[in-house]
Length: 451
Image 1 (cartoon, rainbow, N blue to C red):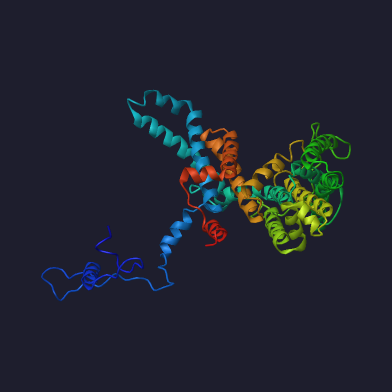
Image 2: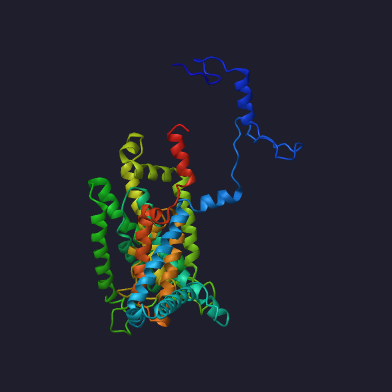
């Protein structure tokens, strides 16, 4: 049976009658309200062909703020780490933990005690790293930021060393050993060579950089010529450097003649990095050198021919070799420059204000911390600088947190590890906070689908 009311415009059915068209227009046209025949409701505005309504500036800001971009994921990862750290602070305090035994009777006791211990710990972390509102005097007010920058400077160098090797397709675990050789040569030049101020400092820095470059050249040439894995070589060279440091400290001419323990002669003042905020504050010119090194590595990677070759080899060595790039030379250069940077980081430990003589623990863990800094900074130079600043703040603030709040300094190390874990698992952070895809990612997806 055929339809008695065929649809208008259908090529397979009869044309609509005039009465049907009139009824359709009446349904589509808005009518005036009852009792007001002069007031007609205008038809809904339709956008012009090819033009779409643009979202407001505020909506764009909110969309981008809650998108899964690098900055948002990093900030939320730090927030998650601090939340987990707060739980650990509560669990590690026996007095606070005891209030949870009767939480059903008086929940306010547990909540207040938890808030007090966590807020006090993080407040001291802030006061020790950034600014203390209760400080009196210029020196006391700037002391927190001075300590943060002091800890930051060597981490920038070792972080850049690891990040540069990553971009070249190599995993440099040897920043610790390279920094150790750098600190040895810098200290020896600092107390053994009688040179005028300025020149003495420059020569000591160059010696430290060359020492680190030499320690990076060894695994680089082994990787390039024999294919020996750089991870194994750099780990073994770390041990060699550490034991060499322990041996050389107690040698005649190096060991302090006035001391019986393992400590070298002090570095002359002419070879020390100048302090930036006076003798009472430890921050020194090493942080300025670190910023210059960051700018140079950023330029090297993004603006130079060597940087292009380095990134090409890091992405695909076979394709780079086919394109005429010398993979062997690139591997060696990457490890040499990486070692040079780590050597400068070691130099900061003895030429700056951290120490003025060699000891078995003078280098601390800046090489291994540099791996965390590089990962947190997404192996990008300026990201590494910011990550080193965060780690320096955690280290400086952790000292005050331990002294004033009784929180173990190891908890700061746990915070650093948690931050890196969350940064290394962005999918987990996106899932927890239900982040939208970043605009660049959506655009790439649209291009892949042909719009």
